[in-house]
Structures are given as C-alpha cells and as structure tokens.
Length: 261
Ligand SMILES: C[S@@+](CC[C@H](N)C(=O)[O-])C[C@H]1O[C@@H](n2cnc3c(N)ncnc32)[C@H](O)[C@@H]1O
Image 1 (cartoon, rainbow, N blue to C red):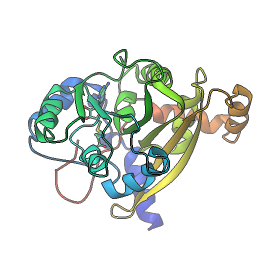
Image 2: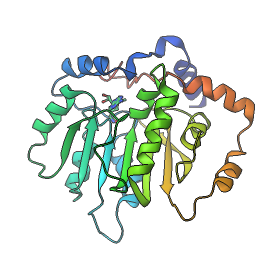
Image 3: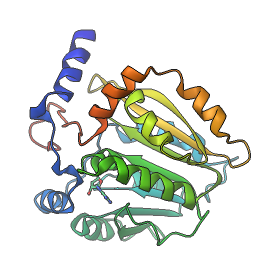
C-alpha cells in the first residue's frame, strides 16, 4: 500500500500528469460539453464528503444553514445535501455549460440554486451572508492559472468576507497540507484558523487533504496563527510553493477515460 501511495505521489509530480489549463473556463466548457449527462465526483465519494461535512453544517438538527458550493461541476454532492434536508444551497461554477445542465437536472430541487459565476468575483454575495462554504477541487483549479497564487489569496479574502462569524469554509484538495497552509493563511489573515486533516479514499487507495477554516473574529489572532505555522520548516515551504503553483492531479480511478483530464 505504501509503495502504491509513493507511486501515486510521484505521478502527481510528474509533468505528464500536470496541466495548466484547469484554470481556464474554455477548458471546462469543452470538457462538460463533451460529457453531457454525466455526474463525476472529484477526490472523494459523496458518502465520505457528507460524513466529513455534516457535523459543521447543523446545530441540533437545524438545517437552515446557508451553503455555498464553489466550482460545483456536475457533482451530485449538493443534491445529496438537499436530500438530507438542506434547502439553502447555492452552487456556482464558471462553466455555463455545466450550470445550464445542473439547473435542468435539479429543477425539482426547489430552492437550490445553480449560478454561472467566477469564484474570483463573489460580489453577488453580501458580507456575512453564508454559514458554510465548500470547495472540492475548485481552488486546485484556480491554482493552475499563471496568476493562481494571487487569485487564491484574492478568493480567500472574499470567502472570509461573505462568511458569517463562526462560519466554516472547507476545502478538499489533492495537495498535501503544507503545500496549501501558507496560502490559506497568507498574505493576510483571513479571520479564520485553518487546520488540515487527511482523508483516505479507500477505493482509490490515496489520500486527500481537507482544510477546515473556521472564522472567528473575536478569537482570531495573527500571533496564534503564526505560532501554528511554525510547525513547517521554511525549506519545506519553498518546496511546497513550487508544488502549489499551477498544478492539479489527474484522476485515475481505474475506470477508463471517464473523469480524466
Ligand atoms: C476539479 S473540478 C471539481 C468539480 C466538483 N467540485 C467535484 O468535486 O466533483 C473543478 C471545478 O471548478 C470549476 N472552476 C474552475 N475555476 C473556476 C473559477 N475561477 N470560478 C468558478 N468555477 C471554477 C470548474 O469548471 C470545475 O467544474
């Protein structure tokens, strides 16, 4: 198993598995245009993602949380949440092709919204208007832009703005924790603490990182955040910065070409 993971890690870092076009709207429109009707889950299966997230979504059975899903693609995850009783879900993606398709597919899910929107501009959302934000693979795609690092910092600032105090942003990434932590905490503090946790995808025999960012205006202190950061060495961070820029993992689920990029 360890050997397989090492091989998977090596593959992640091999150029043939990396691409820079995951940050392009045109790439995704073309991809979704040629896979109409499909539903594909990146990184984690729905039951795993649901088990991780639901503890952050509700308090004592209250399912009225306002939920924002970034880069929803054609994932069925939001429909699963809807089925569990969550009604205030807004899904965004910059691919109008996939958003049109999802609007049609989930027309019966009254109240669940699908909006064509770039995560780089979240001006549509008012300050402190969202309780929970979920990302699975969208920010990895944004990192693939040539200006990806700056863009992700910009997105995080906006996410922090739209999150309510005590709200949670969860980002699931193929990247190892230390590759993303510097970006989710810098260059400015986003008024959240950011803790990574490893999630194993048993079927694919590989692990992903789930970054749990909790906004807490009162408790948050830059000093506390900096102290937590001292765990990673500067040489490690240098290495990770190179890895964070412009890369996303190709999916290989052993099921042929579906889901590959
Ligand atoms: C790796 S896929 C993940 C899809 C879905 N979240 C999942 O878990 O299966 C990345 C998604 O992010 C979208 N995306 C990439 N960059 C974006 C941006 N700047 N604004 C909005 N959506 C974006 C893509 O269109 C694509 O649907």
